Length: 286
Length: 67
Ligand SMILES: Cc1ncc(C[n+]2csc(CCOP(=O)(O)OP(=O)(O)O)c2C)c(N)n1
Ligand code: SF4
Ligand code: SF4
Ligand code: SF4
Image (tube, rainbow over all chains, first blue to last red; front, side):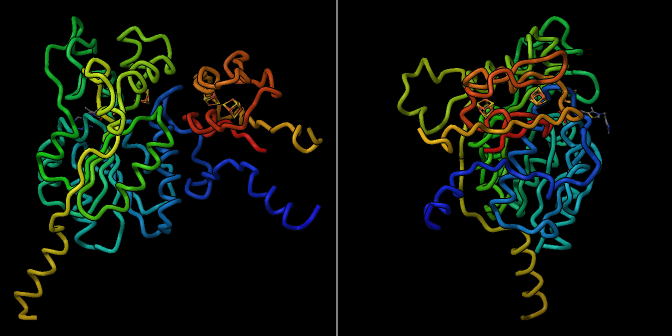
């Protein structure tokens, strides 16, 4: 075999992605239940970070409280595990003190949109450079399955035994209306699409919000009579969403009632840290 | 078909990490995997297309497919 043929063959070999370089040694197995989507999302995120070319020390991952917020405990970046709902506020402090860091916030739908709703909208409004990943499983997982602001109407939860009567938030619409300059949605099921979306969100300058639809088979799944994690992924993440690229071409009945996936909003707006520096320079007469 | 083209992939299951959720089994397009008790096992290696979907969707870093 010629040398050229050997190289060509080598390129075809599929090597599994080596996650270990981004994980803290000896921390696995993680605490998440069998079939929990949070692990799938973490893997997409690590592959996206790898593609971004960022060094581990250039990243600071900040979380609040919840199952999703346990993510920073497993990764070998600068990490901060903070207070329920306040991840974005801590992250704002980190970013202002060290603007050179790439700040990635990992938060749950309860953490970001219920107790942290106020912090969330004002962070988006400032358009401070950070990536906010909302792991959206429509439930408070960690505390035993209470309904959250993204629990669909009619769903069962520990605090809605006869069905949830509250209308739910659209996390992406909320982020966009609040001023986030990059807004997207992905799912744990569509792992490679999610990886691409996460890479774009990390590369964006300004507040980027990605709502990631994933599943809590233990509390949401059981209470809503899903048979397995795979069935939830199939029915909620696959059949319950449609890509923005396809949505225009599909008949309305195939899009109605489904969540859009993909990049939903992208705009250029002044970034908070830069505006802050500009103000400092102006006051100092520079 | 040459000998090299027929080479089978190598599927590694990290038994200490597998939580038996069966996501990899349910989504494998060619039905390569099965649950053996609470851990995944390889049932039909010949059918594996090396698509990597099992690894991509495993929440627990528990399965890898090498060429
Ligand atoms: C101030 C405060 N209030 C309430 C709690 C209890 N608590 C812990 S996690 C959590 C909800 C987490 O849900 P979510 O953010 O959706 O994350 P998940 O566990 O579903 O990933 C609550 C209410 C707390 N830790 N601190
Ligand atoms: S309780 Fe739900 S969200 Fe928390 S680890 Fe278990 S499956 Fe995941
Ligand atoms: S690589 Fe693809 S075909 Fe092979 S076991 Fe995994 S999912 Fe199945
Ligand atoms: S997806 Fe992972 S944890 Fe689940 S059964 Fe397969 S190898 Fe085990």
